[in-house]
Length: 386
Image (cartoon, rainbow, N blue to C red; front, side, top):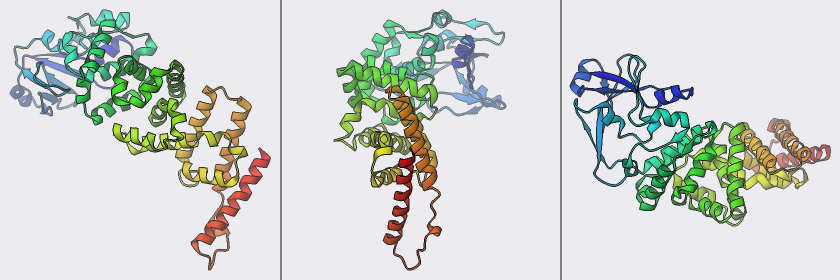
């Protein structure tokens, strides 16, 4: 039995990039031997084991054969005779097909070290085309390393386009695709993920509404990707990062108010993603003119944005508004004024307490009117002060 460190831990050490997990491949062993050594089996499709102490994953060397369409259409083979080179040969990218032995010596049969040095994302073999999920994985690696200067090899990008054009990308479940999208939103350059999907036409298959807008107008493409880049540089919430992708749809949302919900439902996005994006696009324009709006409109907006119930949501939306206004090159003093006004509305309206009113013998409707009257008075005073 021989054990090698593989995958991300080896790759990211070469890149001086932070990593959190270490994976291992075991050559010349069997499930029975691993269990006898105290390892816990966890793999369903192929033998993967957890180390009895570190709980890190140890996988028996394996090869694979495509037997049907889709990401899961593979038959895996494990055998003590399978070599390290054979195991590495089934991986997606050369930078992920590097192993390291117990002495720190690198085993690199597919040129991964040179591709790390040259900053290239390159497929290991033409078997790359057999797994449609690799389109999204490569796009995600691009989002992770693009800031270091990484590029996708031309031949690899061609294979990604071939996968999309074959239609096999449609065999992936929406849940699996969403998992890749959500992971990409945590990367350093999430806009590069969608830039890659746009180039390879994968975006056409998963979010055709955005693909159409970006494809028909280069300005739409540049503005949307630039916005996501700027948002990601300063905002960590992945809900806000993802919502920025739909900036090109803003004019369309005026007469298709449920479009965001329709898209997010199709993508199987969690409710919080849908809520944030919907509230953002519904309120960004009236938030901008809020110092001049009539009080009833402001009260309506405050209810939607959670000013009186969910301060965390309001804070997220306001930071998002400000970032978008900055990217849109709106007047800086006016941005500061509007931001200050909305913060004041949030602060002052939250000071109002029902207990401050004489509400005995009043109906719920009458109490609501009293509250609205107090809110209106505060808003008028804040507008005058702004």
